[in-house]
Structures are given as C-alpha cells and as structure tokens.
Image (cartoon, rainbow, N blue to C red; front, side, top):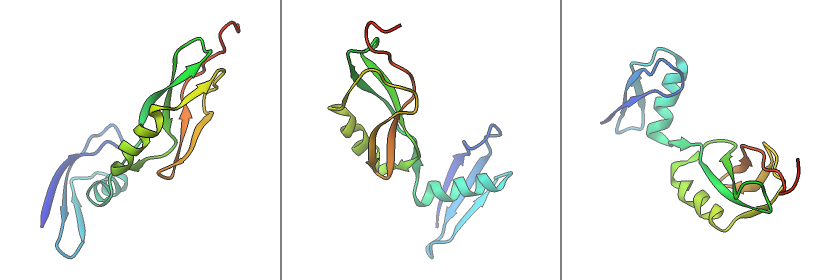
Length: 122
C-alpha cells in the first residue's frame, strides 16, 4: 500500500489529507472535511491534473506578450506538451480576454487572460 500526504487545494480550509492507494487499486482518503477534498485526493494519486499558465508572443500589440491558460486542467504528463506548443506560437493583436488562441492541446484550449490592444489603438 502506498500512502501520500497532501494538502487539499480545492478550498481555503487546506485540509491535510492522507491518501492510501492499495494493491487492488482502492483509494482511501482521510482528513478531508468535505467530499470535494475526497475527490481531490483520489484524483491526485490516480491522475493528477493542472491548469497550465504561460505567455504567448503578440505581433503589433501594446504589449509583447499575452498571458494565457488552459481552459481546463490537463494531465500532469501533458504540461510539457502544452508548453512546447506555445514556444513558436505568435498571435496578431488585438487579443481579447477569453479568446481561444490554440485548440485541442491535451483536451484543452489555450485562452487569453488579458486584453492586448493593437499598437496605436485607444
């Protein structure tokens, strides 16, 4: 049996979890004060996922880059793939908050999290 100690990040309580993964694949979570914590503990030991945040270059924009994030958590093993997909990505200004800049990367889309106006716009 494998036991991991985690701090739940789902809500501000920050419950200290002990998550046990048995040889037969059963997951037991102790220390969670809510069902969301139990679900978080299970997912962390079976298939951890993360929101990926980075920046993308912008042509002709008031800023040289725009902050972006995945619209949903992706498996941790996909983080490097998402980051590599953004290395050569460059978008044309203007960029709006929520605009999809890249679709279907590890089952998620990459969306802008800030507005970047075209150079010279007011």
